[in-house]
Image 1 (spheres, rainbow, N blue to C red):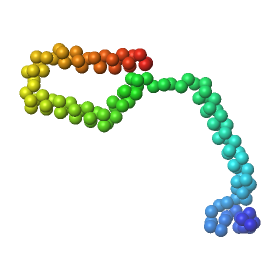
Image 2 (cartoon, rainbow, N blue to C red; image 1 turned 135 degrees about the vertical axis):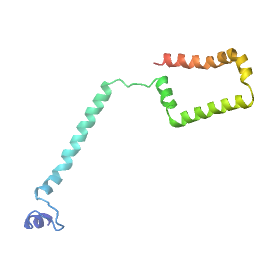
Image 3 (cartoon, rainbow, N blue to C red; image 1 turned 180 degrees about the vertical axis):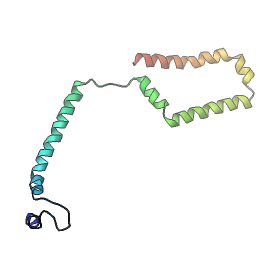
Image 4 (cartoon, helix red, strand yellow; image 1 turned 120 degrees about the vertical axis):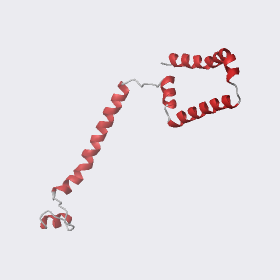
Length: 122
């Protein structure tokens, strides 16, 4: 019925938009053609993914990704400010200057293990 209406109206449908008669025949042949194209694309992608080795992110990449998040940066800056203010208010500056070597040694232990883990998992 639509084909007859479209053919009799000169290629225009009743709402005024241009619709040619060949459009109906493309609609029936279209899904088969378009369904085959994505299947071919999926097969090509699958073959490409199988040929490539999957890159596993190292501990260093994961760590840097986490540290670059805004909430991690804000949290670190906030704790640094709390530490500095606590040392200033409690007047611990002279005491920390006296025991900075053992404190540095204690802080170096987890830092060295983290660096070793980063190097091992590269």
